[in-house]
Length: 292
Image 1 (cartoon, rainbow, N blue to C red):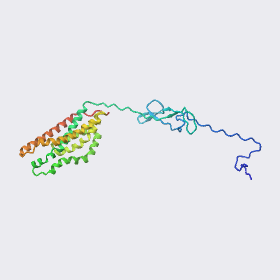
Image 2: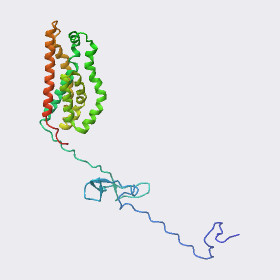
Image 3: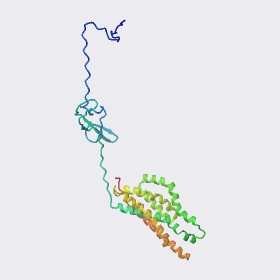
Image 4: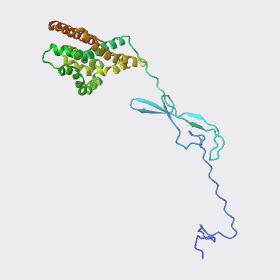
């Protein structure tokens, strides 16, 4: 039994066919879409064309903050593509990303940069010398200052390490906010005061040890940074070496306490005079050059 819209084969049709009516012509197949004239080749999906940012006048101008960037697409010729879709040779171009290159800024250097580096190395050497000048001859000071034990002399060196831990972060913040000149000037001031009042020079260590890399990056060119940084660190190591060598020469272990006091006084005044002279040179020194 056939219902309305059912065909004799059992399926539903739009209407029963009349006997003798001609068969309807088949609908034409949809034409394949050609992407060869677009931005992507036939082997790439539309809309996936790679783009690059370039400052040229091509394309659409896009403003972002204070800089202006232009959008451009670079196309390169592609060969014949006989892919899975059965397409033949291609005249379409495949896009490729281009990474923009920026020229490195030129660094201007000054001849006086070496003077600034040697001046800082002198401050660092003076500070590290005062770290050891009493500890290396502690037996002489224990005998000279009757009733003082070795631990009191050792604390003149250990105080350097004790003050470094709580003060390093504030000094790094000060270096970032105020700049290298103010930090080195403060360190030289503490070093000068510490040459007269011993324990104060331990604070100067915090202002001195972290400077070499910063000074090298501000005053020196890209090819001189490692050399300048190594010379700045060498100043500290040189002061330690002098601290081991010079105090036993300046303060010999003599029996006469009056003569011993004379030698101790000479070492004290020499150390204080050098630290004061370095502080004066830092005060009259020039400011760092403008930003590169």
